[in-house]
Length: 97
Image (cartoon, rainbow, N blue to C red; front, top):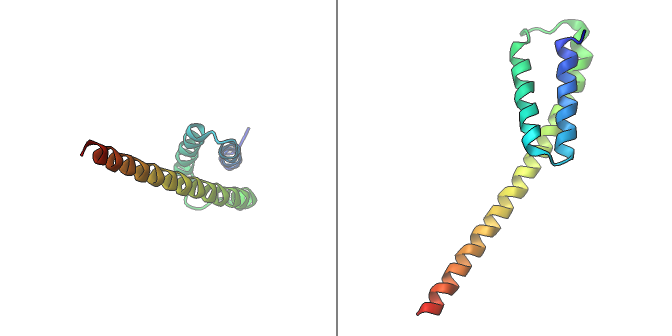
């Protein structure tokens, strides 16, 4: 039987695979499952879970960095699209004058 700490590590690795593959909706779902599992864990983990938690933590921080980088890229792209639309609107307005 898989312990909740082993499952946590599995979910963290799975989310990493999804992020790496650009499968963002599935990565979000995996993150939600991860959080639900974390919410069930006791405040103090047993000593035998330490290694699993350390591994999960390292991967989770990597996942967070990848998510933040992706969000920054999307934000930049959306800003660029917004500027393009404003420019097109101003050109269209000038053409009607």
